[in-house]
Length: 205
Length: 205
DNA sequence: CGTATGCTCAAACGATCGTTTGATTCGTGC
DNA sequence: GCACGAATCAAACGATCGTTTGAGCATACG
Image (cartoon, rainbow over all chains, first blue to last red; front, side):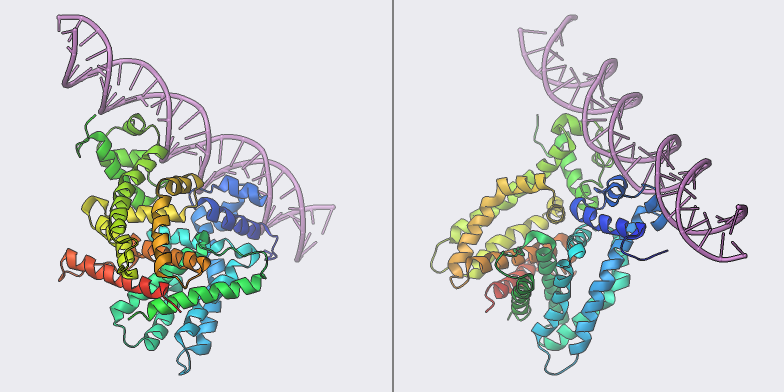
């Protein structure tokens, strides 16, 4: 089995990511999906076993990438005395922005927002089991930098930040690049907006 | 046609609200729905015409209520010199919290979050056409109270606030009442948390 | 009493879904 | 050159979906 970007498996994953983002997990049928990928209908069940396992693979591919970058960024600043709240927020937000501007991954944040909206227990357990430690690590660091917040209030505010970012990055927000700024600049500006808002909210009296 | 709370039509609407929140619009079938409501399968198409029109009615019933309360609260404070940012946020948030604690309406915010996540154009156009003026009125008032923000930044931050609230109120958040506080108190505390966070975010430097 | 009207019901319709099957093609190592 | 496993293919399977049908029931009105 090859892992070149043009194997049947990879082409299915790429087409799935787009169609799941656009029409939802139920809304996108395997017939649309395989047609868009230019492969046979039976290829999904042959390579992934079932549609549900395909959905899991779509998540795994991007979340490994996203959370790897997040953990790398966090480990560089965690526990250090000069680290600011904005630094931690940057470690959380910037990898997501980079992913969402990275060509083929640009629709994944929408898929993620959809997964949050669906209260499907299987999917939520999968997310929690595989990537729960990332949120936990970030929460530890937030707690260190916000010592005046009770545990309850901290969870509250981290959750509100997560909601704001998910909502914004899933494509509702103003993340529309104007033609006179480069993509890199736009990404920087977007990150600054998000970080400033989130830091102020976390620091609320 | 009666409008008593036990007519076939009302029982369908109530069951639909719950099942749409729990399993999504596609995930909840008319067969589950009519079985839960204790009515015949054909009753949905007889009373509403189609499943899509039923979905619209589920939205209309609650959104008329929600946005009516929001506009009433806003009209009492709009344009007045002593009005604070927290007042406007309260006018936006509290009606939603009251609705989500109001027995049969408690699942509607989840339905709304789901609708946001699905990028279905028909549904979004319906929401925008029927209730867009509410968000516009609130934005005008926010602009008055935040004169230093550019139009772009204002839209940005209002969108982030909306995302945080939708996320929180759709049931992910910490909105879990402890047994030693009354529901009224809990609602007040929740509102205070949300308003404090949102006000700080909007006022960010 | 008879008959319209509003509503409910079981049953069926065609379409589409995820999945499986069995034959066929392709590439590789003996 | 041959055989064997991996991969692809068209076709079909059973299940479930939203919707429609036409008969049956109730209530109100002449």
